[in-house]
Length: 227
Image 1 (cartoon, rainbow, N blue to C red):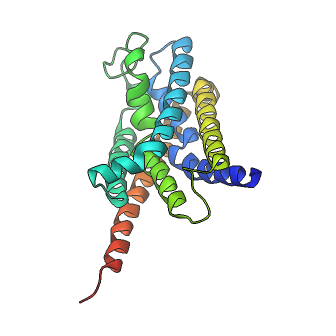
Image 2: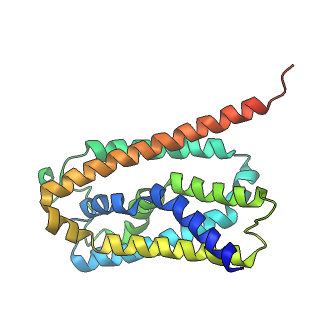
Image 3: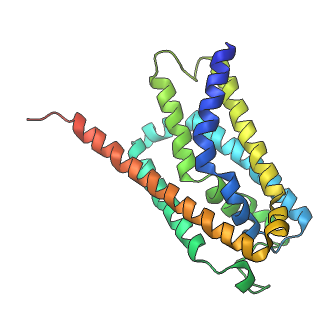
């Protein structure tokens, strides 16, 4: 029982952590909320972490059924998700640096607009985007196809999965909450360099997800009967 829970914890955490990439999202989060007070930034970090937990959990619970209901294949989801992540990474890579932005720029998140920004864009698509949702759904699909492991009817697997999502959410919260410390350590210019670096990584992740969708369709083509 413990081994199944531990295996599901490690599998889910290891699969989702690099896609969500909270270490890379931290500087981006800070750049987006630089117009907010420290208290509001901490509140946003907490809201984002809670939103992420329930979004990933909902994706695992109802994601496969929704795809089946709408007739959407997993490769199609990866293609669409990858395209969105690519677009977001490209925009972040080419946006103005924090030092070049005006203090009253309308696109920035402020204390007054923070309530409407916790979910979009800070939770979705910055933190939990199409890539992580597709990964979560793919994990469940793989579990359900396995003869020895089913998240739907094995309590230890469910416990391990929920624990992994909780650990991910805590990680997101602490990194986002302490994101202002990144700027104090590296300075504005250093933070902008980090933001560009991780925006490029986000772009690469989007390309990888997109190529995974193409590969999925190629695998389906191989299974077609040859006449």
